[in-house]
Amino acid sequence: MRRYFSFLAVLFCLFGVAVDEARAQAPGVCTGSFVNPITDISWGSLFPLTIGPLEIWPSGEPDTPNPSLPVCACLDPIPRIGISVGFWEPVRLADASMKPWCFVNLGGLKLDPGFDIGYKGLAGPSAVGGKQQFSGDWHVHWYMYPLIAWLELVANFACLEVAGVDIMYMTEIDPLWQNSELTTILNPEAVLFANPIALAACAADCVAASVGLPLDPLFWCAGCQGGMYPLNGKISAQSGHVQGSRLAVERFAFKLHRMGVLWGSFGGAGLCGSYPMPIMMKSQYRIAATNPVTSGTKPIGAQTLTGAGRMIPAIGEDMGYLVWRKRNCCLL
Image (cartoon, rainbow, N blue to C red; front, side, top):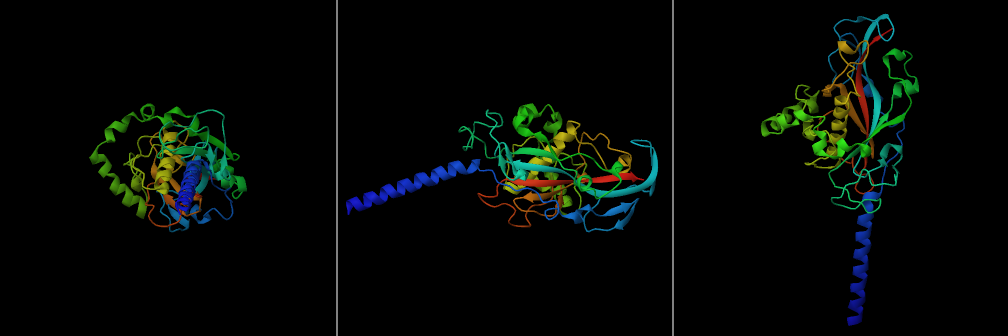
């Protein structure tokens, strides 16, 4: 009998070791799938389609203010007199993963760069070389994805960004994304909003984004996701993968605006082309999930409580998003 219990004890120990090894390997498994431009895109998010202030193709989605006149004139990029149109276009894909070098929207491709960049020595094992990765640090990959121009759905390319699908940015190689002290180079004003009063104002932004559009004057807020600062992937008050990943993508978009990579594209100022926007107007964007499951678009800062099943434990903890941008343009 004693040998029997000793045998069981050995089995339980071996089982425990196997479970621990599985848990140790799990953070290194990158998951994801390629985005199908036909079935995985909520094409209804293109609307409302407007001419001047009039809705030609209405939609239940909230919309930004449009120019007051239906006729417009531009000198750049080509001289033209045209019609002032407004629509939403899918322009960027974004990966959000706590596993460095995990390309979610490329089918869950995991790269081994052969060096330690992108990893942190904090808590929780990762997949490459036994390095450590803190559970609240998100990495973002930003893809060029001008889907309307790519599928040639609109013939007038003066209103569209024409480019191929490409990876534009990887935060693993960005030291400002991984260090909160260095991040202050981009957002020195963050110290002004690190107080309870400023953070309490984000509750109003949460409500506004959930029922309509976010409040652009509260630029330091990401609505229900929390604070927009610091402009990095360290989410200190993460309540789940959906909330944490969306906040990382929203912060990253703001970071690109601050760096001058992303510009404004809506309103009367956007009719003839993009314009500098160092402080991101949150209402310019909508975000839709592409991985592990697809979902409709929501404004920046909207609540994430509705729609269960957007994150699948173990096999769907890497998130992918499609970023929609409002465009006002002088159409020939």
